Length: 68
Image 1 (cartoon, rainbow, N blue to C red):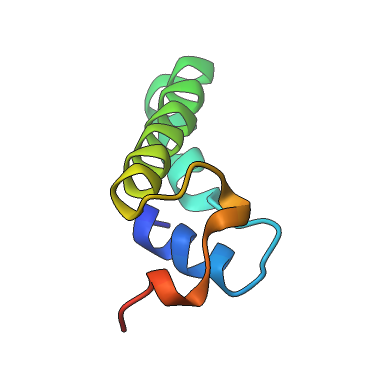
Image 2: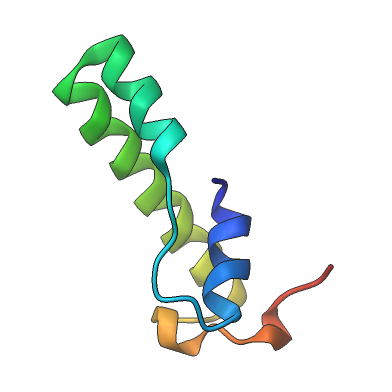
């Protein structure tokens, strides 16, 4: 799931998103370190997208922030 899809999900009042495929890829390539790296990358990308949209928290993300 990309950061844009995460933001879209949270703007639709979702409380969680699944990132299984990315985590499994990290696990198969680098083990525990790969999983930590993937989760850190997703977190950083999500924070970057939130900063660009002017939302300091996920609670601030609304449908008005999404272009389809």
